[in-house]
Image 1: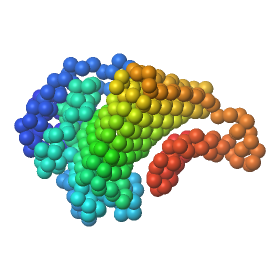
Image 2 (image 1 turned 90 degrees about the horizontal axis):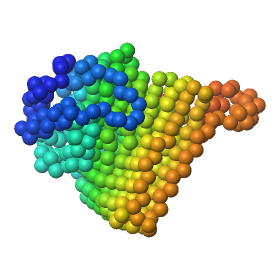
Image 3 (image 1 turned 60 degrees about the vertical axis):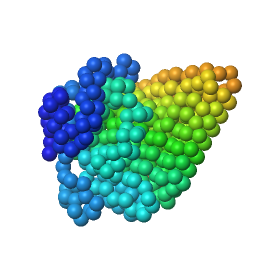
Image 4 (image 1 turned 30 degrees about the vertical axis):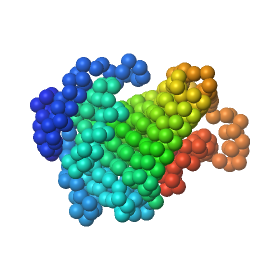
Length: 433
């Protein structure tokens, strides 16, 4: 079921009707659409050169299944080739796979009393819990793309981890675009209750086409007291995808939030995972890599907002630019006036592989009290001729030498991934160098 129609009020009403949503969600969608029409594109970052009239805003390929034997052969083979089917039983406690606009396969492997389902399903099955958290951390009218997501959202993952529950293995969601000019607008909500722990992995790919596609997801994460959440992303979108994502976490007392964010594909990415450190002694970390190659803009970074006392944040950004690519770090760290005895550290390192490529570091750092520490350091470097000469003198070809140096540069990021995903990342990096 495809809906290649002009985006308007009638389209949104039909979409909500197809999904059998309650009236309050339809009203929310219409309010978000009204905001989308009024809000302009961001005034910062790279130019967004695509037409909203060319986007396919909704496509459903098949109903959600819980057994691979019931999924269509085309869908099954697509996810087999991506390695998703093989990884399910080996490394994961649950999986959710989205193709185009809807989740097509979902399986909870763990027998623990968690909620892990598509966001559409959560709206129907857990309406009170859903409404309590939906649109509370990322407001629909923050920017043009949160408004667009609010109007046409479909799919995504909804996770609730009960108090003091710890999963043995990660949960994973995989998002795939297979249709030309598709817009994918998933909505993900994760609640990690008091004392609980969750590791969640997200993968993203798309088939390559001549026309641009749009990915504009929204992620809201709530980390309870003494709880911990790790959200790892490796996105390898094709180079015709505009990847415009808003991700934010609210962290309570003694809670810990970790963003592990890898950006390799896409034509253009604008993504800045954020932690709001609301509770005293809460911690936030963001370790990110960006690889920008020919005709690619990777405008990425992180945000850390310190509100509670004794809060700590750490941002590590690794950027690589090659073949004329543009890799930019853009971030915001603010230590509020009441966030006494807090510490923030930002470290941005960029490796430029040729004369055609470029990189910028654009930080906004705000310190509002005299009892806290905020540090920022940045380096930009090229591959050392001495290092290349030394490695080549050992009989290693130049291309292999550059690959080894790049992989060493990214070691801090790879160390944060499970072994199987670090191996996958290595292969992605090698294919993109």
